[in-house]
Length: 154
Length: 121
Image (cartoon, rainbow over the protein chains, first blue to last red):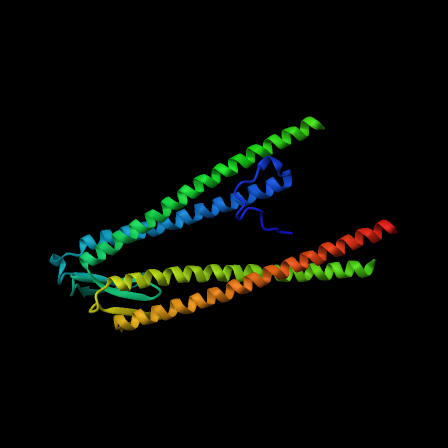
């Protein structure tokens, strides 16, 4: 039966008092958490890249490009010619289907803010991940010791 | 003997069912959390914008123009709703936890009964 591991509040558990199966379970759980962190880090990185490239795109939208012709993608493989009518504003997706019109400066700030936010989250995860992997290493160590003790006995 | 065995099997089936429900409730709860976060971000973003900014709402593939006040109200309503849902699911999860524990307990007792009878035999 998949019991929920014994650690919610009890931070201080002497690992040496746990049995081998308990340790294995604990290690498995830690491994799972660690891979979850890895995944989260990766998707955060992806988001960060997207914001970054959107921010870089804004550098190209200058008053000089007003009225210049562009090709607007209708689908991935079909374009129609168009002209840049407004180079002062862009519309940004701010989440849950809402789009807001922003001037270029505001949009740049928006992306800067987003990148800072995502970076902050990544740093947080990295710190927690580091701690978790330390715990995991200790658990592995104790397991090793226990196994050695067992083989010595038999 | 066979009677106890049957009861045990029945209990196991019920426990498994409850566990499945529990998992489902947990993942719904996680989704709600994500939605709440996203809406909160949108709310913060809307609050940063001045009143005369144009706001669009994506309905299917079309962007529909909207007043910023209306958008703010909608997001606030959405957050309210999600918060209520979260509370509801927290309760459901708590109940399922209790139910699981109950099943485990009876299962444990039944297994002990089985041990006793098999020892006697």
